[in-house]
Image: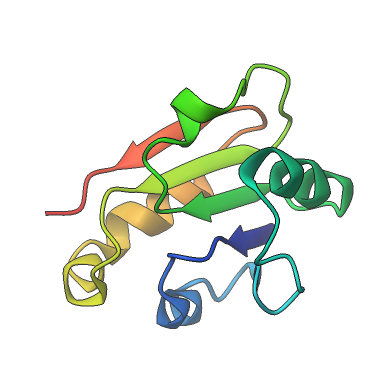
Length: 106
């Protein structure tokens, strides 16, 4: 599965996705794209899951026509995210086209 990490998603998280191809918006030169533009580019480049820490994404964008699955992490804190790796992996592994889910980071 092709997964894209948005700007705030900690890059070390990618090492936990051994069965997925993970890229970052920064690596692909997409760091300056706004959410709507970014989602369109992500979809047109064959990504299946978009992992972000932008909790407002659902309120800023009309996601009903999107094919990509979106997984929102409720924190950018790497130490806190590390404690929730299993839940994050499960959210990505079970993501389906057009789905939107938030992983609560404690």
